[in-house]
Image 1: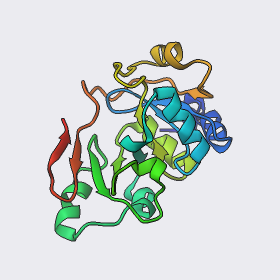
Image 2: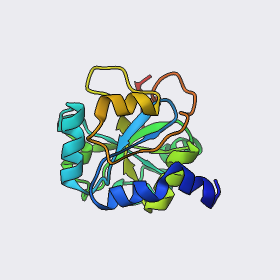
Image 3: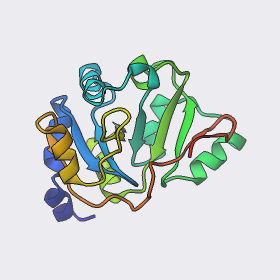
Image 4: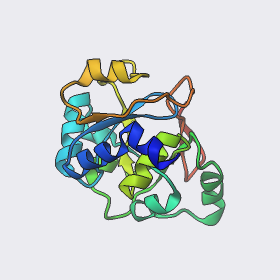
Length: 189
């Protein structure tokens, strides 16, 4: 992606929104995601309220590379981390042991944190421009189908979002699968 592409897609505006603790939406591998600064408790609380999602369920963090996720997780033994790292960047979300510093509002009632190094070019560019991971949860109210286009996101959540980055999703038919990094077991298909 060129600097012109980034400006055209609205990344500077999205970053300003994140810096102010606002909520944004952006395309991911399968659906549009709602996101915010994962360390901004009030932003995460607004996002959960908007989705009508209980904090106990936890959230997913997406990143442009593994280094952005490293402060949030405790690595597994090398033989368990190998399949995780080999799947990234890509549409694979993994549950990894959460760092002791990870707040409850991210991990929910779990000792793990759901994380993904995204291969979606716009979502990855957003994380690079932000300089770290972002909360990424499907753009829908709990129990409803997720939005797959910017127009649907605006219809569902205007005026609660500061910025909606337009663009195509990555073409997957369903949200990314989730696997437990400790066992390799599939949690969400």
